[in-house]
Image (cartoon, rainbow, N blue to C red):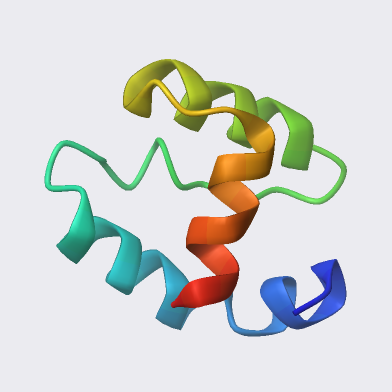
Amino acid sequence: MNTTEIKGNWNELKGKLKQQFANLTDNDLLLKEGKQDEMLGRLQIKLGKTKEELYKIITSL
């Protein structure tokens, strides 16, 4: 899954991430144009995962 597919399916993926990681909030998963790195940074801090681990998690959903 590439970044275009992730953006297109973000609402569905966001729901699955919130099910898998109950401590995530809507603000943590807020995807704004041009702010993907900022969102990934928030997720890295909150979940204690690397960027590569987050991509693996997201693409496996």
